Image (tube, rainbow, N blue to C red; front, side):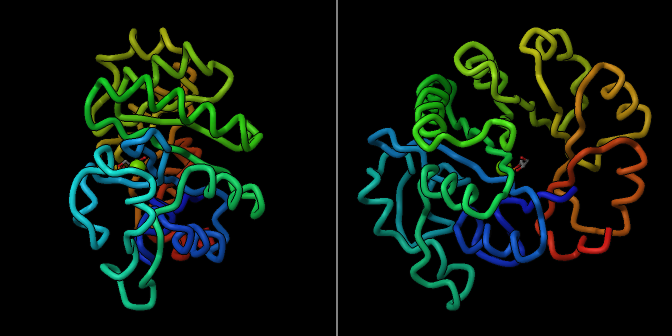
Length: 237
Ligand code: G3P
Ligand code: MG
């Protein structure tokens, strides 16, 4: 199974509705997107701490209101074709994915530890208000703290820990929050690590694999989901 990374990173501006649309057109059943809070506490879909790289604005997402973020162009930096593309709210994306029957791996972006509780609370409110089916959702984060808050506040929603290192030294902490999945950088995954993690009860998700020729190997190792910038390249896998 394939998940479009940040929508479909190579095909459209990241974390936008157009990117998610590209993933859908590529036949992906999943998307991976990032969320964080605006200054006035609205979960938006955005990767970096600052808006500089992927919009025509300046400053940090957490210092800009939803009104200010809503005025930014999040598409022109990628190409003219996408000029005027907006930063979507989590609510808009959940509704869009519901309408298109797409599963979501929602990454909670924690740029500072104090952001974890409020982000989990607000994300939980939006999921509830939209009535998004939790069987179509995995929450994940590089932040163990965020996943601990998810375990305590919204335990019924599946949780995954993202890592670019061997997670075994953290296994006690991971076990204590009853995770569903480990989301591991594909370059550091070995067959033996895959076996150990699967035996320990975790689903394996890898990122960010863009070479479809490697997909079979990872599938044979038991990987459940491949996050890719090029969901269209995996069409026949
Ligand atoms: O969720 C896996 C992957 O998205 C983590 O890296 O920086 O693209 O959010 P990043
Ligand atoms: Mg991400």
